[in-house]
Amino acid sequence: MAQPTPPISGPSSHQNVTESSKKPVVILCIGMAGSGKTTLMQRLNSYLHTQSTPPYILNLDPAVTHMPYTANIDIRDTVDYKEVMKQYNLGPNGGILTALNLFTTKFDQVLGFVEKRAESVEYVLVDTPGQIEIFTWSASGAIITDSLASSFPTVIAYIIDTPRTTAPATFMSNMLYACSILYKTRLPFVLVFNKTDVEPHDFALEWMEDWQAFQRDLDARGRDEHGETSYLNSLMGSMSLVLEEFYSNLRAVGVSAMTGEGMRAFFSAIEEARKEYESDYKPELDRLTAERAQQTESDKKDNLARLMKDMTVTPGQSNPFGPHARNEREDRDMDEGGPDSEEEREIQRQEEEEAEAENEETFDVRDMEPPDIMTMPTGRTGMRWPRPQ
View (spheres, rainbow, N blue to C red):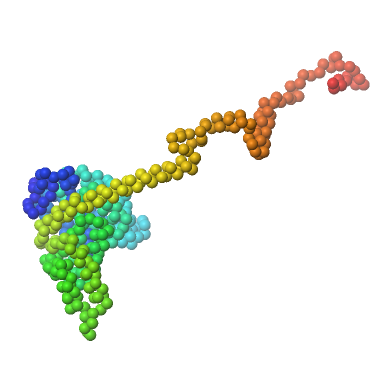
């Protein structure tokens, strides 16, 4: 595999690396509808090919009609989005969510395919549905994210439409959404301001670094005809103070999916995020995985102990019916004088009578020998039955 040109650094650019760092970096591209995720995916794919490091691409958007790149694994090859809508009588968003849920049931196979290519690729690009809430807040999206993060270094690339973020209210909405995704996924995070060829992202970086600059622009744009600020402006001003710490630990880059500007800066931020994953996030994930495994084992032992207690079986005792075998218990019960209660004695008496009736011989007329009439004393009719003895 050819070595990428600096400043992009990956597994192939470090000869003395651990086995974990040889794994490909998974880049989850998440963003609002219209932010340019698919176009950026094509630009990333094209750029990595020019660096002789072609990526492994996963498409998780079942409703996309055209992709400018070829995905190695495409959800549309597994689930027919329109057929799902038809069979389940769903709308567009419900159809996308159901299709993603169905695909998640087979995601272990997807991981198997990615792991087979882990030694030959450096980056795994994942394109998510345009309806951001379907992936970020659904159970299937969480399963996919956790599955990837537990197997490979995973980075969240939150893509923002820069021209639509020039308004302070829109900028704050994007930052709050990015903050919620960061704390939900707990993975390294990169803010990607797309479409910088239309609108530079310098204003956004200034607002993130200096909350007072954001407050000044907010006051300048948000006053009414009487010069008063609205409640929304006061709320956003307070939010900027709350997010100040969030900004300080966040990576932000500007890119253009159309011109390719900012690709080097983007992959440099991805490499820093990978190192952060290895040093901070991976140990925490391992700790949580060990705790879950320990809790599962503890629950199994508790359930087994409760079951043994319900069956009155002491530890180390193999017979669930007590210290004696079942037939031995019955024999011992008979040796000790039989059952104690009147009902048990009545049942035993009935069983004995039934057993005697079964063994008793039954006679029929045909079983009796005919009398010898030639030797019988005679009477009025010439013969007489003997008197009973």
